[in-house]
Length: 424
Image (cartoon, rainbow, N blue to C red; front, side, top):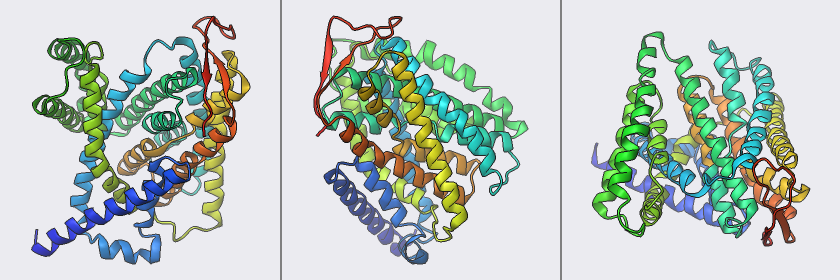
């Protein structure tokens, strides 16, 4: 790299952080999660603004591969953190309620998304038609577990019955989504690479049957309050990076390896360690993820946004919102959850955030999405995430009692109920 390129790279990083965190802060001031402002920052720095002059000046082609590499590292660590959070916060025996809610929240939008895929094929032809249709169904079925967890925490709902149900259901939806995405990517791989994809099976078995017990033995000593030392943190990051490298070498995306490594981390006796890991990982990703938003935003081009694109965007939003709200609401109501908390749960499950952007990036890289459709789906992710706060505030303007519905006993009131505080 020349001296001028180094100077421009450092300036770009500083500018990205200022804009992303500035807009993220403004988003929180109007009741939105920071990711809404950060995604918007990426779109504003893309070719849409001023006919691409801003992006071409700030991010010349010689600099973009370096930014992409930093973004990849950020997403790898983000997925490691997602795996950590899922096991720590959500999978706590919520049982049948979480399973039914996640089923409705996934199956209904997925089925509607299949129909949407056929509709979008008219203007977005591809040789991988079956994979394209399945991918569109998957794209509208996603819930952003990390963003949902932040919203619950900010509004004081994380420790309530509703918060527990939402976290457990979103965790299951995320696991299903990443598994399905792995299947789609395996299906569209070249014929000569299928033998490498098949290595995922022994890879997962080794992680579950060998690496997880070894980690439990190494990390679970003491009373669960042992902090993460610098060396221990480095070791676990090395594990996440190596797992990401392994899945990438198998013909899959690196995000799967990092996610799986976080998912298998033992929870018993490692409470303080896991909390430290997540806090340190968030510190690093708070610097690197804004770079990912910009790299994603550089691929969003809305300059040719005409009536055809408006029609497609309306169809995408209709399927995404109606599918998520309808599927979640029906699942929650079938388990005896009252109408108002079922509506709030539907709003929470409709948030997509960065998780959607990561999935769309995989689709774009795999050739399933063209630039125009990718741009529309990024707008969908931004709109649906921005909807969550206002709908939740309107739904939870007053306290409500949410019954703890036990597995196998839909609709039955328990001995103890959890009072949900006001959202505002």
